[in-house]
Image (tube, rainbow, N blue to C red; front, side, top):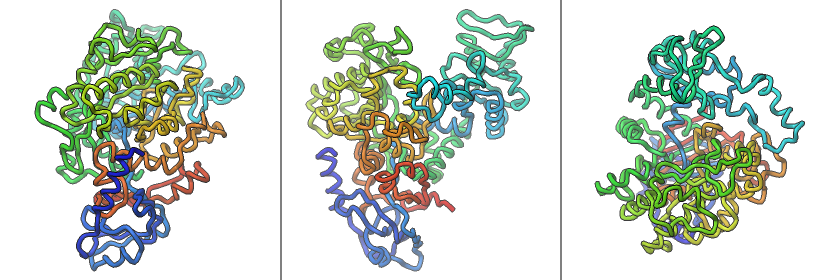
Length: 609
């Protein structure tokens, strides 16, 4: 942990206190309380007054504040921790997946039809059913390590192979028309090269059996000349143009669904990648008193021109909705083989990844993709991303920037070093973040500590993405999700779920999956037995810290959350599994952990019956 992080936590603990001896509103007794507060790491009881923690200590100390209106909960030895703080959530996409349709694990007709039908039942008539990402697990099934031999791979993929004989699963509009009479549908395959529209959507787009395929696209037709609903390329745009905007009420419904999933997992703070439409939804739910998790706001970095001009700086907001930084991107993602590498993908010769739009224009056209290992990106003329980072400096709101491939990581380290050095900020408490830091070359780890960076990483990626990682980048996988190397180099680790995942994978919001992956580096079925590059494992204590204290600190909120300390917000999670014991002795037990209670601001927002 960084020296200033330790100092900040110690100061908070010293300044806390139980306040007046007024009765508490809530008292938890007989718990196994894991505080993350170095001043008192363990306790058995907590007393809460209003939104704040009044006492962390013995049963007797907490019970001394019991009054006639105090709710007392006997935890019967249950494990208590600070509420989890998910450092990377796509709330809009997660809500759309929960309320809409999730086809990631679907690659056969029956399941496809059933999932579309369920979405139609959930959504109001007239609502569009979109996305889906069918077939993401068709080649490598859930639980695959990607290291199965030919025989093992054949076994693991037998069901998928049977379902997709003759090629990848491709649905037909006839499969879903009768279950979607009032819902236009435009869903896509996981690679987003192939789409399916139902008859209603085709009608709305004016596509008939007589419609020719447009240049650069295809409207698929069967042997009888009948439109199948399959569209590719520019043909998809004909239907996209007919899609109506999502209603505000549906947006509220989707956020509520995410809040429910969060509180059921003990998550009390969500760090979101936020659009203006989402922010309005959060404000509305806040005004209605419906928020059950605090939301940290981070819009895209290109907004800094406007928000900076309005004087919005670090700390803007309140304890429920707070502006904590700006999001930007260097490259693509591993799921789509678009992360940027020095060497081509092993499975896709000639593919080195992509440069994201916010990087453009570069100081020299094509600079990122042509850069060699011996060159420093920041020594060339300034491009758009560096210009925006410079604009963010006066606001005090740190850039949180996505970099996944080894070249993207190096480019971002070059840019961070240049801007931080220019403003004499390297040794200042800046808390700038690299998001994902997914594949790092050995020569670059030390720079995370030297630049005092936060590494916002996603541990569950290990359990899921290993199924295809080595096929795509071979030996470079040794530097993938290298949390031990990052931490040992001096980076502050912040865990995030990356919910709901990418077009190629489903990532869960519940923190048990991230904790499990960080300490085991195994699939959900416990493979490989020794762990995937096991030298990169974290301890369970380090993993919990990366999900609680560190995200609070990285958002400049360590004075109000992240530890169970008197004076801090009463954001508390209670589990039916001792997370520390399980992580040390039997990581598989972490996957069984359920939140018994989730408490936000002293209010019990989830109670498992």
